[in-house]
Image (tube, rainbow, N blue to C red; front, side, top):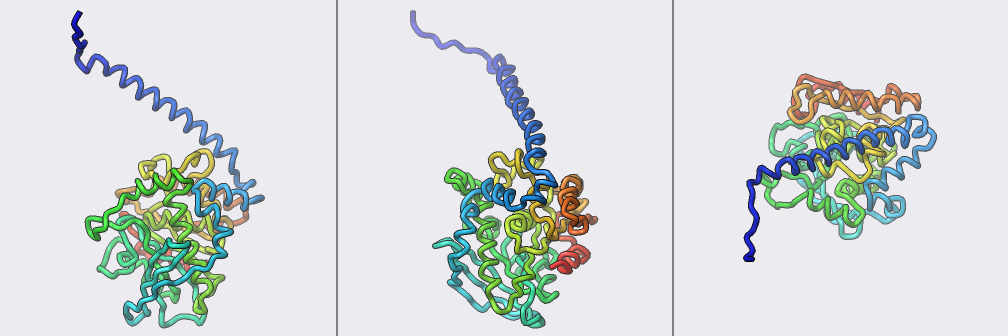
Length: 346
């Protein structure tokens, strides 16, 4: 008998596809429900207060190398391989620098040295966000949603370094890259793009706290969007950061897990945004959120902030966290209340 392929309308098999998808979602929902219970058992306000080093090491392990080796690698000197004078805007001297933070892995950024500063001034990392660069968050190309982020820090007398991360807008700046593919490749070898870039920022701090113009006891970090995300992530990782300001970024990671570089294996069982921010306690951290933010909005930030509060209360640091909401969009709060609070606690 000759072979005659059997055919049917594709709609006949549709219920099976739909059923399979539903079963996958059902299984995931059960895991997520169980994860919330597991996370609540893994890290509690009391346990974190008793053993912060244990939880910080677990946080490093979640993100991966090279953070897991930071305690050893931090002893390797950070070498400034390029230091170029850019200009002077009347308020500060501006220099573009490139630092070798780990072997051939280098990070570039822009240094702002205010003329009116103390002999040893506070040091602040000003972190740009998605589609941005150090130049964008520092007004090199005109006004934008950073609302003069870098210069509002400089005018207060801080030495500011704005590092560049793998986040620039390819349509505007060119030099194509695939951040999520690079993150996937890094995760295959036990790292992640977040681990690598948090490590890089920490190594930048390693360099600048040795400079004669920096007060190594007054280190801070501030950033918008992805910059706010990295502010929280780095402040959690680095106890030298005394005060942090994370703008338009403090959200429920489960709701926004389409950002694949914001997710790590087993994170829902251990550290989501509130638990990561809890590692900052009893130091200082504030958040802002625009009520009209088209990406996140303020409702998620308010919910996550409520989850965070008990961790600070357990360490007698209820007044060391703040959430500022404002009638604005995805932008650094143009009002000075948040940035003033942040700077006052450096």
